[in-house]
Picture 1 (cartoon, helix red, strand yellow):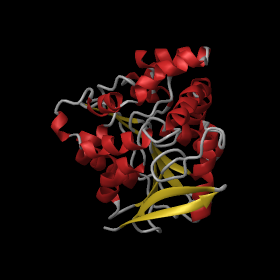
Picture 2 (picture 1 turned 180 degrees about the vertical axis):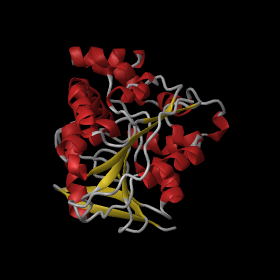
Picture 3 (picture 1 turned 120 degrees about the vertical axis):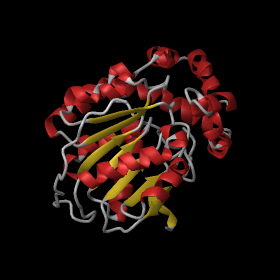
Picture 4 (picture 1 turned 45 degrees about the vertical axis):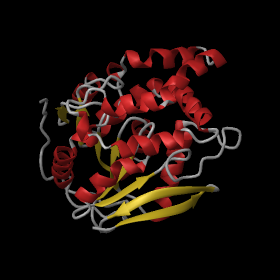
Length: 307
C-alpha cells in the first residue's frame, strides 16, 4: 500500500491531501476535526486502501495546507467547505462517501446539502448534527457566540494548550497507553505557530453558525436517506453519544455503534473502526469517482447497533 502526499492550488492556497488506493474504486473522503489534520487518518488509510480509494485533505490553517492570517483569509466553515469542494472538483472526485469527525461534520454536511447526488454514504465518528450531541463542554464557546468579546475569546485560549490537546486525545480512553503521542505532539506544534490561535478563535466563533443549520442537515437526512454509519466514542465529553443515537430519528436504516472510547475513537479502536467502515462501504455497492451520474447499488440493508 502506497500513500501519496499531494498539494493542489485552490483559490490561491496550497491545499495538502493524502491519497491512496485505486482511483477507480469507491471513494471515501476523510474530513478531519479540531485540532488535528489528515495525519489522524494515516493508519485508517493504510487499513482500507487495498479495497477503496481514499482522499484526506487538510483544511486551510491545519496540517500542511496554507495557513494565511485571519487578516488575509476569512476562516469560516462555509469557506472550509468551499475549499474541499473545489479540491474534489480539481482532482476529479465526483461521487464519494464522506467520513466526518468533529469539525469534519459541518464541512461534510455542507457538501452533502450542496451536492446530494454525489454522496454515496456517510460515516460519522463523533461528528455532530443534533442539539443532543452538544455537551457542557460547549458552554464557554456558546458564551463567545453570544458575546464575541476579547475577554470571552481569551477564555477559550485554554483549549489551545498542550494540556487541552492531551485531554482531547486521552479523556474517556480506558487504556491511554494505546494513544499514540505523536498525533497530539504534531497537532500542538501547529497550534503553537504564530497567528494560529487567532485562526482557531475565528473558527470557534464561526462554529456558532452550525447549530442553526442542524435542521437543514436533518431535512437532508430525512429526504435523501443516505446510508449512514455512526461509530462513536461513548465517553466523548465534547460530542456526547446522544448525538450518535439521534441519527436514528431521521434515518430508518442508520447503523449506530458506540465504542468504549473518547473523542478520537480511531486512536484506540482502529481495527474495529476499520472493520465497521469496510463492511459499511461494501454495502454501498460499486461506484465510479469520475461519473457524477453513476449510482451504486445498495447491497445490504443497514442495521441499528448500540453496543
